[in-house]
Length: 464
Image (cartoon, rainbow, N blue to C red; front, top):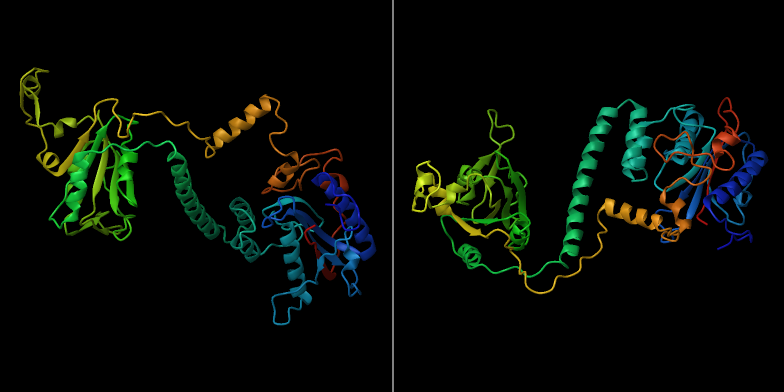
């Protein structure tokens, strides 16, 4: 779509930025602009991927005696123009308050917000004016800047960095955890297309139905099979919302995240030794009692754990080193420590608790928990792996597929275009010299900062 003035739409952001620079240069001469910060941004919340807008904060040498914003028209587009104001009762910025309000406006335009493409300024933060922490905190709280940008700005603020870093680390950890949980759900939907019906095991059905009546204790279901046999996915299929612990070599059973009111089962995945289950037997019997977890000399991190009536399922490999604990009989010679023999005798090293309190479903090597009959389904494309995405792009490039991605979209995805971004950024994409040698480097610093407190004014462009 062309501009309202009839000027053709620029072919790329470099051409648009050239038009903006020419317009800005004319405006600076006609208005007497002393300080200037301008930036081109992608409209993040627009349904149009090509929609962009401008922010321009200016300080004027003289008051602007005009009642209309048409003086700021950019090829027929009339921007939203307002004077600098401060968060006071009258919103009037005067004196020192005006200077701070003006600098806040400059920082808002200068900050590398999400969707930023190009920027120029002759009045830069930290170099020519101090940045207040609340400006940075406000942009981050409103999700205008990324976590990485907030971390860089916090470091440059210096004062209060330790507290901001703690907040940032906590937020990033929680965001990663939530993204991972969402990813699990999306991947599960894709994997569901590959899954075949699970087999039915009478022992599992009897174990499930044992929870339909009140009892003093319940047995632990243990799935024993080769790796890649479907133990974990079969265990998850038994519940609606299980609490899953990847055990491996853990010495202590961490149940701090278990919620009795929301989790309908407990899965101990990848248990490495039968002895671990025997060690945790007081908890795993799911009796009507409250026990303490996380105990230590001071009990600072101790917590209550209650598992009455909670079905517990564990998965363990066939080749676990202490499988003798659940073998009722062993060859006579092996029992005597003299190797293997043919005659079976009662195993003296067996665990009576494991044999009496577990329901074991053991598959032979190579056997699966799902139905292996019938044709295999073709797997869907892997759109979740970053490596897979990069590999597909690399393969298309090797094949000479230049139409693999719309070239007009590249600059809207945050990649530096010809001419580059502000090369002074630490937090945004780095600029590189284009055909004009880089915008800021080639065109200078747009003049020196004015002395004293100039008249304040600002212009904010509408999306075009």
